[in-house]
Image (cartoon, rainbow, N blue to C red; front, side, top):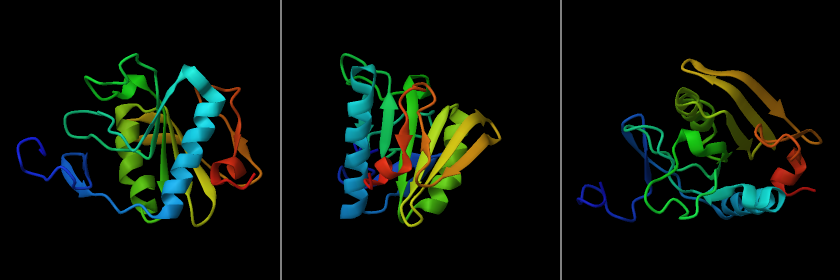
Length: 171
């Protein structure tokens, strides 16, 4: 839409279920948490993955969200010709400071319907990590809420355990 002039190139929006949704401005704490988690995942998983920060994922013709973190299958061209699709996604992480309701609700439903197997939401205010797994067209069938000192590993990398403290930079 930016290419044809419907939206300006610098508008902060994403396409969710056919609707253009205004993205909230990122504060310093949100940006720092995203960067911290990006580095943590890169250090732990190395060349097994490509960690994308606030870049689009093509779920379908009506949804192209820009999650805070997407851990995807590495590709030599870094997805220069097309955004990753659900088949290439290992993990999606949203950092929720002002967007908790949307991240736990409509975004979780979109990701589940697209078959994203592992979806995490960092609840900044409560310092909790929400884990969503077992996607179905009706939503995620398994949901967990973790707090310090609990830990979890990305579903596809079960030996890469990450503590809640590490996610929030408390360890």
